[in-house]
Image (cartoon, rainbow, N blue to C red):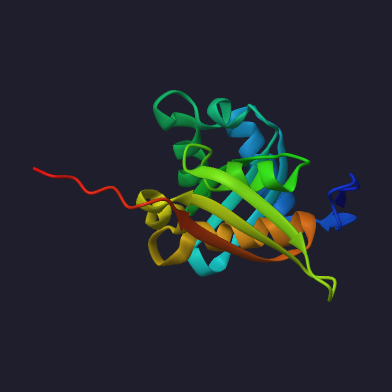
Amino acid sequence: MCSKQNKGASIVSEIKITQDQMRLMHLFEGKTHVRARDCIEDEKYDRVIFVVDEGKAGAAIGKGGVLIKAVQNAIEQNVEIVEHSEDPAKFLTNVLRPKLVREVKINNRDNGTRIATVMVDNNNKALAIGREGRNVSKARLIANRYFGITQVTIEGVGAPTLEMS
């Protein structure tokens, strides 16, 4: 079973979904009543990432997180939700939290590889990267899976804000 990705910004023509991922997606949909477009098992961080349609993350999480907690309890792993976009810059913004991201630049290199640079305020750089690089790792997984982007870097912009007490 594959889901097609064939818009102009996309390099990847199909995404293969395993039987285990299909099972997880079915369970997710049963608990949340939200369609999962994709499921990515990230063994390094013991989590499952579900990709849902734009605007559906809140419905999948549920009031007070009740639905997402039910999924986590059922699969006994951490669960994260990302809203899909056909635009790689928007998709990466969704992965790293829209409130943190100022801009995303996608560049094609001469050797055929694609890289993404995500610009965030200096104050938010650590949040965007995540503990032990969890968030940037998730961004790399998704960017490569959907758009063939092999490198994602996060750069801080602007002067750091100093708080005085």
